Length: 278
Ligand SMILES: Cc1ccc2c(c1)c1c3c(c(C)cc1n2CCCN)C(=O)NC3=O
Image (tube, rainbow, N blue to C red; front, top):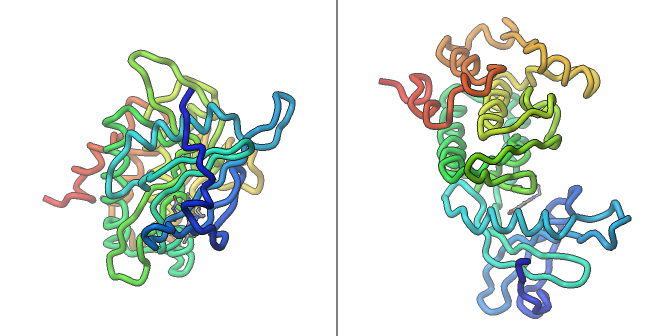
């Protein structure tokens, strides 16, 4: 069992405003007392007793921490420290000030192909790095892709939230039912053995959204969305894609492929002619 620091996190960090919250707990800005440096604190409520449905199992927190400890990349949120008390674990991570890519796109409705390529190159670099370490994220979506600083012309992106991530051991079979309906691959819906290819499907969905502002499989209900995914029911609606290059559509089509082994890998994406012109 991993042992995290038992110090009281407030002895070392001043806890400040809430930046976001979710199923896991809260993310707050924190100020390191010794240096004045600002970080983000991810406050994870631990499950109290086997019967409880609230909070996270300690083992799942240990898994997320172990995965983050193995990832050092400029496009992946960095983990600095971990504290625990009876009721919660606190991850001290780098503060990413530019907010979600989701909001950045919403403000613009959609991106130019040049902007989309700039963001995708960084996302693919980060995903290629984690896949090279046999780690799948399994919850890639614009809400989990943040901007270092949205005021600069070409902001850096940071992939966050490894709460669904998994590190594949040699020959191990892994299944999961988690994720967000719009972005999950068919094999997740069918509860089939997963691979890092599930992330590549999500990148195909994200790219479609970048270029149109639309979500390719979104239905009126989650059930309808899942049905659209299993039927591979999507199209490049002319009203939104009439100005989109054939190379961009080819990139998306080579990711929204039902068979995991036939989907482009992150490495193949990085040399696709839309991303890396000759
Ligand atoms: C300025 C700001 C605003 C909201 C933030 C964050 C930072 C943030 C951060 C992180 C996470 C996991 C969630 C975060 N959220 C919650 C929303 C993420 N989808 C993180 O790891 N570093 C952050 O700065």
